[in-house]
Image 1 (cartoon, each protein chain N blue to C red):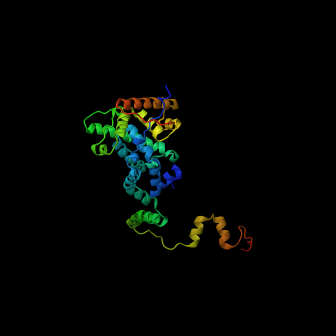
Image 2 (cartoon, each protein chain N blue to C red; image 1 turned 135 degrees about the vertical axis):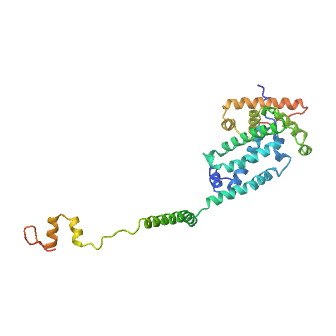
Image 3 (cartoon, rainbow over the protein chains, first blue to last red; image 1 turned 60 degrees about the vertical axis):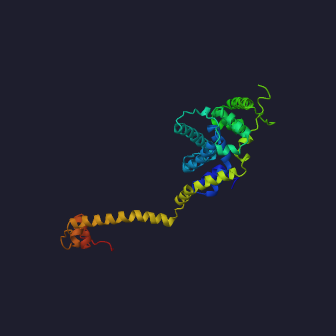
Length: 187
Length: 120
């Protein structure tokens, strides 16, 4: 079932096939989470947003006009949910949190078992704007190609390259500012 | 831009699985738990077979047919019995429908000038 196309899985899910929907979730849960993290900048919010997005997608599956492009449609839901989530949270806390300033403020229970490097990375990531967070996470963590990111974010490929460059630079500077030595990958 | 600046930073600590190996299974399980009801609803909607369709159709149509029958009966009785002018002779019916010259031919078995007709 995991090798089935999104188109087949969406069609089966429309009829309530639990295995098909489960396969869709399994296939796209990482990228949904990373996109949500790119929008919110906070892991605990990203989890809620990504899970909600899958359920919203299931409810509105008839609206997915091109099932072969399910992922792009899902990620649009993730981004919209993420922005609404930030807006709601900002209102609830009585603050106005511009998405690009939504910094990682880890909850106390998670902070205990999270390494200092992870916390620093989250904080550094929180200093990037939404687009750069998404670009760097999709490219450097999920291994997406520039072209794929450009398509899903609806921006030119050159802009993706530029965002990626500045995102890495900003992350590196932020981490160094926190006294961390960023680990680099040989790619 | 320097080569150093463009080298990717290791972001794997941001993968929730890095500190929690069962993270994605749990994530998946939580989504599927919440998806159970909407999926069941979809199955119910998709699982309509022919007998059920007929039953649903019958449930809709039967009351409408019954109502129509009642209305028709009411309309019929409110107009009273249909008036009848008594037995109708075949000749009268035929006279009403046929031109008289042709009718004479049919009734007498002879042509218009008294010539015998061909056998039927």
